[in-house]
Length: 114
Ligand code: FES
Image 1 (cartoon, rainbow, N blue to C red):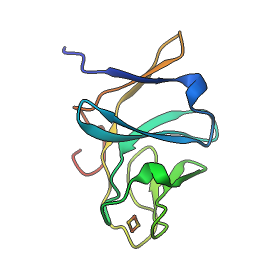
Image 2: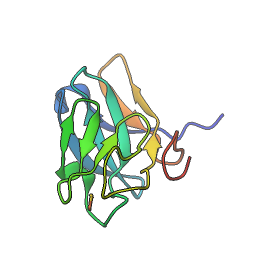
Image 3: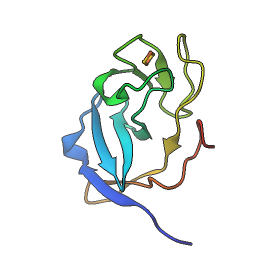
Image 4: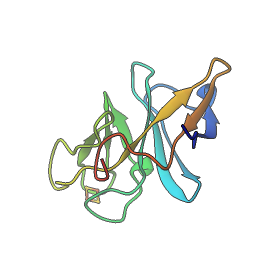
């Protein structure tokens, strides 16, 4: 099985309730940490318009778009309210014992491509 995980950040760079935008192997990724400490990677492009979700805010287990306020479920990528109606891709995340966070930009677990 091929491993396409790419190291993108360290756990101490991303506190609970924070989001970071980064480009991972040419894919725009919003790396978000829910308020319980779980780390999630979503496409960093809102499905409603060409806006970076990493400019928004983490609310519970959702990421809220800064432009029109749609909230996307961090686990499924599904929008939980209008105006967005399409999900965004969710990518696999790995947190290693040394605190490094890696994302697989190739595969998506759910969302628009899954
Ligand atoms: S651009 Fe994200 S909800 Fe409209």
